[in-house]
Structures are given as C-alpha cells and as structure tokens.
Length: 88
Image 1: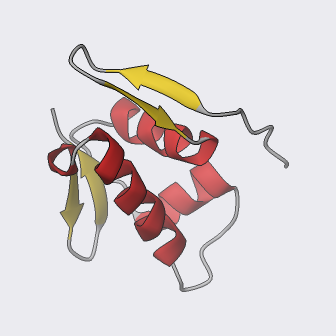
Image 2: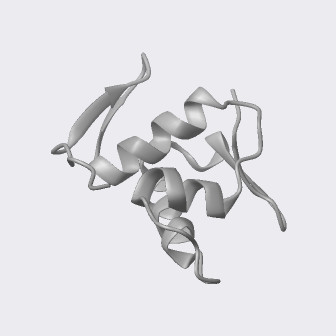
C-alpha cells in the first residue's frame, strides 16, 4: 500500500524546535511511541518506508543519523545487532 507523505513538520521539545522531513517525522513518531523498546531496522524499514528489508538496512541508518543531528544524538541509542531505541 502507498503512503501519503506529509510535508516538513516542525517539532518542539520545550527548549528548541527543529524541522523534520516526512520520513524523519514518521521515524521519530514510531520510536517515540515505543520509547524504551529496541526496534529492529527491519521493523523500521517496513513501518516507515513500507517495504521488506532485502539485507541492506543502511536506509534506516542514514535517516537515524539525520534525525540524531536534528533532535540530539543522545535521544536515540543504537543497540548493536538489534536496532534503535528512543530514550527519555
């Protein structure tokens, strides 16, 4: 199924704001909704991009990198061999 992509979205954390692309926003929301839980790259690829992983999940890694630059590197933790986790 196709996903309707939103335009850029501004988020505010009480101290600063940043503008996220539609993909970054979808990724942020999914990680935030599952805060504290490790989410696999494959799950993120399916949920955000809408397709199955074919062995290469660098797409997810690059989007996480851009998201970290915007919201702060300390808010998303890499769990080696597992995926990513949003921390409080």
